[in-house]
Length: 103
Image 1 (cartoon, rainbow, N blue to C red):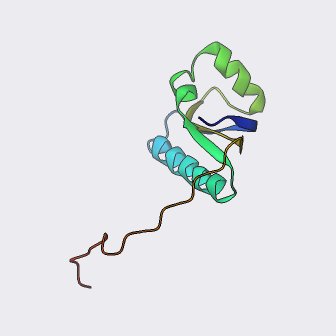
Image 2 (tube, rainbow, N blue to C red; image 1 turned 90 degrees about the vertical axis):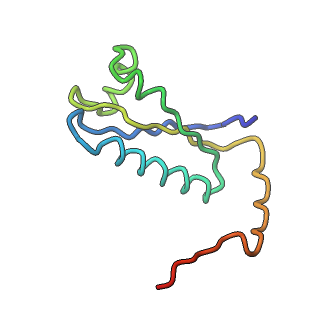
């Protein structure tokens, strides 16, 4: 189990009527997860703010940070230092990736 210390919550928001907002926010958060890992930080995708984006108590936390009435929270992540080291990545096995496509 990981415990985060000095953690931060980062949320990606978009206008309610933005057709591709969910995909754009998901891509942004995925890139932040990869960046956090490369910096030696722990990170975890948190989807609950999205499901509760219209709950007044939650909106009251985000409005002072700049969330407007026409925006929704679409993706969030928690980032921080952890109390454990990441295990080493196992080496790749040769011959596991094959491609029959010739260019």
